[in-house]
Image (cartoon, rainbow, N blue to C red; front, side):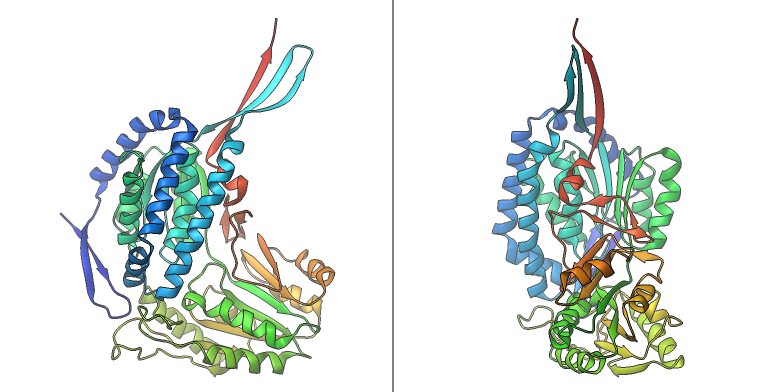
Length: 461
């Protein structure tokens, strides 16, 4: 039996070894899910909701232990892990509140003996390859609504957050979800490819563009429903009338939270020349206040990178920016960290005088690094904000809502922010344009995406 090593990215120490699901094992779980799904779909919604409500209560009861587990295997600071789990509880509440109305059959026409209705039925068996940076958020965006809508789920957590994935499965089963209706698959790429080989009714993925393109190439010819949440290179524009200090404090957090390992982390900031210097000064003051330390310490803000190879990505972006004339104002290199040089640590890094010839402003960083570019007016800011293959989020800081709307209406992004950033709401759809992906999660549409509409034409005689 092959084993998956789970290491602590803060110390490089081995936490545990877990049995890997090979191709044969994945196929068995997929067949069991296919067999079990009709009975789960036939289970009254009130009972499915009760299972998810019990699951919520179990998550809340074990929140501290679950947060510690997530911190150990991903390096996310413990305070951030608790924030994620508390936010996850709110997302469950939203899905529970909306499930019944989303599933309700709609009568859209009823006249002269002809009735037309839309029924919403489950997709069937859902495959989900999830992410490590926000495992409860990203995973829960899929498996909670999928289960509520009557689907079975084959859930492959990231190989960098497998203990969290197993905890999800344990708590769902304890809450009454049948074991074959939700099955965790442990492993890396081979396990993911084994999942893609199964007969699935929907495939939901969060991760890199390259892996998303691979999944699309494999699943596309089968006409399987796809949802791909991929990368981002998220921009923000600080207008001439913005308060540069308030904007800087907000954007510093938006760039560095979770060590910049968020799909919607702010990675590019365009600042009007008139407020540029004050903005940069305030941003540096704020970033310098972020404490790097042991992820289990209550006051730690900056933890390690979860994946060691990303250190080389950041180093390459730094070297490229410096070679092309950018000015490094802070950081720019690996950090020793609190464990004597062990672990995947990188200093919070801020660049000024950047331009779009640099990888720093074009390629996803996924780390604690930010580029700042001075602009002369709105038109120039919009042009640079749109100069990207991605389109996940974008923001504007200004006291004038009309001004913000005028700018953001020209920006190609699935989510836009006025005077805020790095924010996700269960009430709003989460989607991307271009290389940021296809499909959506969250909102009422994110519940309905786990169903297929069935049109009924009913003539009375």
